[in-house]
Length: 147
Image (cartoon, rainbow, N blue to C red; front, top):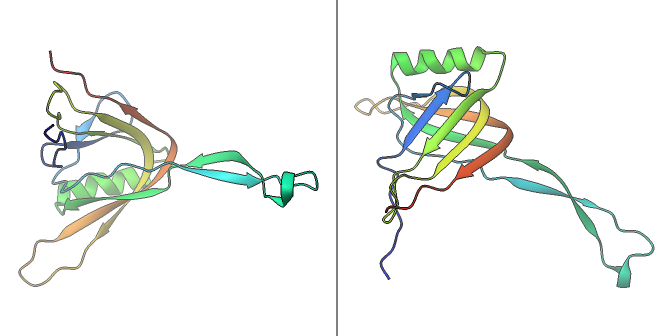
């Protein structure tokens, strides 16, 4: 069976201040999707069977990610405004469709961004990373199957 893997080229990374109207982040060079980690709380007691530690699930945390982008004045200005906003920014990452799909998978989350310029060599392009502290849930919507 042939692979259904895809490359990042063709994906989109968008942002929104209201969760309704999204605009592409300019010059994005890759995608990043938060990985959700679950905290486990120890609940071992004197009654725990055979001296084994026991755990229960605690809170979830989507952590931090970094989206690579090329530096442009407009892109940097947008990210500075988002960084200085009082509320978290909405993000949507849409992958290109895999073979057998008519639309790609979509990941949505909210985050507090902080743009970071990268130093470069004399003849190299200037890039920036958009460091994001994720807040709240991360949703995944599977792309639609081709008909």
